[in-house]
Structure formats: C-alpha cells, structure tokens
Figure 1 (cartoon, rainbow, N blue to C red):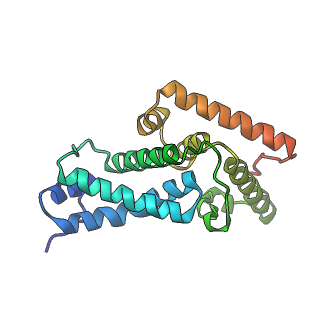
Figure 2: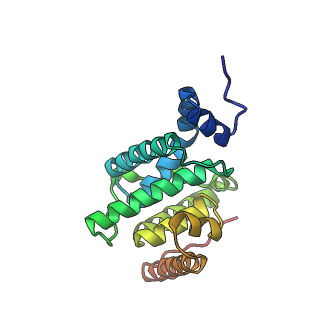
Length: 199
C-alpha cells in the first residue's frame, strides 16, 4: 500500500499523471479548504463558489491528464491560478464589474487572526471588533481590490506572486492594493471606524 503523507503536492500530481488516482484524492484533501476559502472570498456567494471550486478541479484534472502540468514546485499556486481564471471568465460572462453583495452564507469569521486571542479580554474584544470592521470594509471593495488584499494579507503572497496569479503586472497589483487601502481608509473615516489594534 502506498503512503502519500511524505509526498509533496508536486510529486502527487506527477503520480496522478502516471495513473495513480489515489494520489489525486490526497491532492484534493490537502488543497480543497484553502482553495475554497479563496474562491468564496472573491465571489462572495456560496453556490457560485461551489461551482467554481468544482470547475477548478475538473479543469485541473483535464490539464493533468493532458500533460499540461510541469513540476514547478508550486502546485497550490497553479491551482489558484486556474481558479482565478475561471472567476475572471465568469465575471466577464456576466459582465459584472460590480461588487457582489455579502450575505449570511459568506461570513468570514473563520479568517480570524490567532494573535487576537492574546492579551486582556478588553483588548481581545477591541481587536475582534477591528478585524470585523476591516472585513466589512473589504466587502465593499471592487472584486479586483478585494482579491489582492486577500492574497496579500490572508494568503501572504508576494506582489510578484499576486501579479503572476492574476495575470497582471506587479505595478497593477501594487496599484490595486494602494487603491484598496485608500478606499478602506476613506470608508473608515466616513463611518468613524477605529482601525488601531490593541496590544
């Protein structure tokens, strides 16, 4: 019986292309939650996120079977790029440049920062409120700005990686982040939202 625990994602992908279907099951198990969180954060709708998630893995399977995956040491990056392209195609098809409205199904409380649990109860409350306020501000950003903020702060990707994933230049990625921060600061000021964290 083969064990997959010590294999990298890239090794598993190559095993799958060689005919080992269980290797793909392991790849799916390792990557599904992170990928789904990314998709949901961008599209803001549970049903749409589920559809895009399934489309992403179907496209990944086809590409793997067609030999269109080269071991670059970044399988999850490659998978996220596929998801990003599907999201962009969906936005183009629906000709929607508008923000998709948030609802109760796409609460982002699972993205909480572990550092918030440190310190006094009062500091914890203040910090939790600040993070909630930041999430609400992010919900109001255009999709391309919300995406770059998510990739930078929640996935901790570099601007070079963000640029590669989204198919734009580094300057465009930086510009989107700049505008996102300007918009969030402006909205925070308008609504008198305090964004300073307690230590």
